[in-house]
Image 1 (spheres, rainbow, N blue to C red):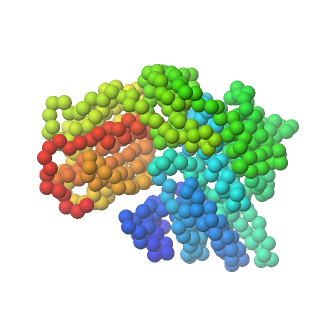
Image 2 (cartoon, rainbow, N blue to C red):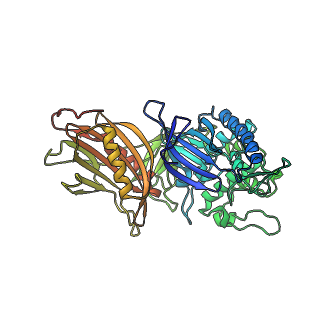
Image 3 (spheres, helix red, strand yellow):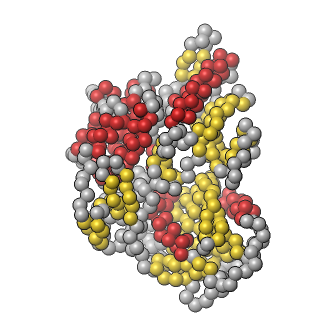
Amino acid sequence: MLGKTLGGRYKIFQQIGEGGFGVTFLAEDIQRPGNPLCIVKLFRPQTNDSHTLTAGKILFNREAETLERLGIHDQIPRLLAHLQEDRQFYLVQEFIDGYDISEELPPQGNFLSETEVIHLLIEILEVLSFVHQQQVIHRDIKPSNIRRRQSDGKIVLIDFGAVKQISTQVVSPQGQTSFTVAIGTRGYMPSEQANGNPQFSSDIYALGMIGIQALTGMYPHTLPCSAQTGEIDWRTQAQEDSQLADIIDTMVRYDYRQRYPTADLALQALRSIIVPVPETVEIPESSTKRQSSVTKPPLTQAPQSTKIPKTVAIGMGISAVVIAMGIGIWSLIRPPIEEFSIYPYENLNYGFQIRYPKRWERRDINNPITGEVVEFLSPKQNENDTFQEKVTISVEGFTGTLDEFGKLSTTEINKYLKQALIESRSDFTLAQRSGKKFIFSGRYGNHLLKNVQIFTLRGDKAYVIIYTSEKDSFHRFLPTAEAMIKSLQFTNPEEPPASGK
């Protein structure tokens, strides 16, 4: 499939997922300026007999019409095309640059605060409410199908389950249709959905299980349930006795008729318990709760107690948010909390200056082979911190275009990391010059890493900045890395520009 062009337009260049329903690829739209990225989903019918293919095509077209209708919402990917080629079905959808909310949920044994959970659930329900108003059941609500968009921090719902039936249906010669598996995910899928009878409240159940996961740090399939009633026994794991806990209990009732019937009603219940925002709140230096991943454009860490007007402290006090009451949308504040030094102090040999946090360790490298000049390492968080996030700057000799340098970078990424995945490519302005930005992830040794690479060309040199982090900590240190990147300036006279872009 790699290198294949669908419909004469969507060129597939990378596989990013595979499951029982089919395969997912990254592709480029070669008929649009800049060849923007898109997602291609291949659905494979269980059989290739004519009855199944005919019924599959009808179902496929019907679900494509549904996705087209849903895509008018800003927080649902737009459907770009639906195609049938070589007896297989393809959907082409808008690529959402960002990350899924599994990165915001706590690891085993940790938890989020009630405030964080309330607002996360509200954000998701605001989108799900539109879906239900369109008389559509998502059928596969789970953290990996809820993405946080990089550009604006908004929640985006992806991967609607109904279309997966294309891959699971079997049609008899008499025209009777059956489905080989239930659509949904273990732990998030309620009993009626597992029995092939999904309801609107099935989505509410799945979302309630996400809330429990956030409050307990336990995966849904590991939670005990009553053998007599089928109800989830989760409160003892979270020690919760609050209005939020009562609402979540209603969301995850075993009997779907006892849950909130639609997203609208669950949303109303959660909005009713939002705590009014005080005029001034102390942001503590430490807390017994986990430092959570941020759930909006990332915020920086507060090293000391600070007073900020009209804010609430989130998690360990690393986040400050202004809550727009009643609609669950946050305006975010990044207080200037880091003290910065300037690199370099003593000379300007490399033609640039950059500000870096005084708390970070500076290591001069000056490697003539790799072009690496300097790296800045974050402070160790505790004795068990085996990986220090870092920002590395390289200056490499290069004559060519940005696109040519980008291809070289892609080759190096695939060499350096196992299971390398370039999640996004975009234009970027670095030190007032045109550049490129790659976000990519992969495994190096025992570490699952996520990186931002930004580069520009000046004269006969390429200037490259890479922020490298373990994937779970990526958004925690990203604001500091962004501040460093933004501060980069060229200090020597302008050299003749490199050819090309």
